[in-house]
Length: 67
Image 1 (cartoon, rainbow, N blue to C red):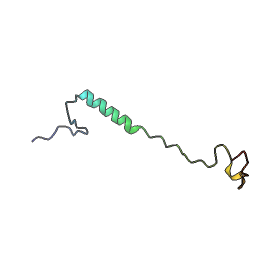
Image 2: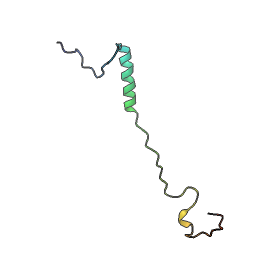
Image 3: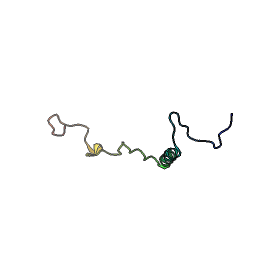
Image 4: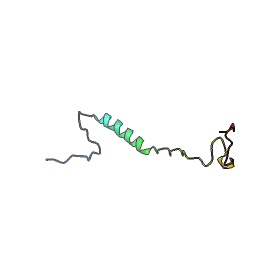
């Protein structure tokens, strides 16, 4: 058994990839590795979006329009 001339990072499982195809795949993987994921948007708000809950009274009358 002879050792490969160059150590390869990629291995083709099925079919035969040419040097151009391997170079394109390597360029794609390197470009994806450089991209940083965007931070997830925070879903939690510090205050209510359309009203201030801390200013509402604890009791509302049954006939109130705010119920």
